[in-house]
Length: 417
Image 1 (cartoon, rainbow, N blue to C red):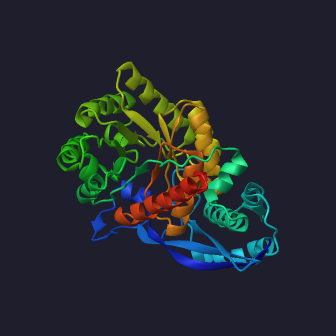
Image 2 (cartoon, one colour):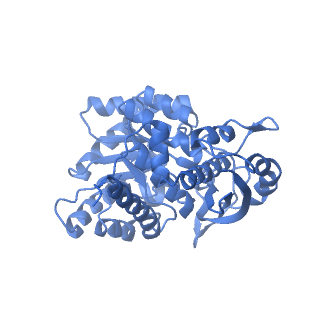
Image 3 (cartoon, rainbow, N blue to C red):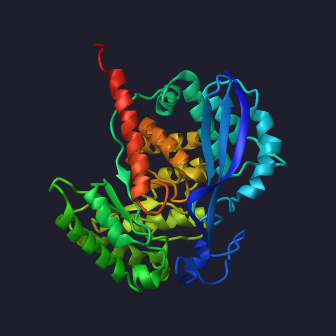
């Protein structure tokens, strides 16, 4: 079977692009927008509408495979590729990528994806968002051509067992961190709430007092609302490097503060993502190592999650090898091809590192569904409910795709009547 046509269309992602540097510098909310000027290259506003490119591959038998090229909310910072704008990418795709896809015979997914992962045009690799979307479409095409689920294709090509068991889901609240957490507790999400702790005055507190109060509130709320006492989710909060700013780069103070949060969590597993942002990979690894070592000396069980400066498959290997954290966020659009997500999870698992298959609120339903299949194949400790910041929609998309796939896998393993 071959690809007959490659089609590209501009689409809307499920959230927005935000200039993280401007927000950290104090850009204030103006309704849903932000006041002030952007500071990161490519942005025309601190917050602007998210975009994607919808990729469709029409196969010889008339079936249509798809993937969406999408980029993270906080593009252009932390070592990531620049802002991804559809209008700039469509002419490039039609001129350079469509001729390479049309007429391509359906081979193994990994071989097809590798062609675009390493492709250079004009001396530059494709934007990570393009590699991400193209690989999704090729995985979907391979699945349709072989009449298999995408997770089965991945298991076959990576020599992995097909495991018909749920991967825990992690919900994110966005700024609605109270109502969002309530929703997650009522739906018994396995990890929560993310919390979007991305500034000091309103969310963290000058000495971290607002985050401490929020964690205590979460614990009370879980115990008040949970349908069963057996429900005991992990608490996972992303602080976007604000602890490093609040404690003026004094890593021992950051570690001491984190150790104190364990009491606030009151027995629930506690993960803190991105406690510091050192504006470079080597320094980030060193800083997280120092914080983690101090936590270990204090006997604290708070776990550190790496995010900033841990973007590519190579980065993830470096953080894992350095034992710089307890868990790595594998931010799927930042890795390029979705095969890199699978390989990152497998690397973490083989090196005793927890893997969180994340992504961004700024993805689409298509990319989220294919990420479910990557997770079912590679088996991270958790995966993100996405896209969007409303929680319910992203959770339904990810949870339901997982449940559908699991039921098919279970049926295939059942004895014939």
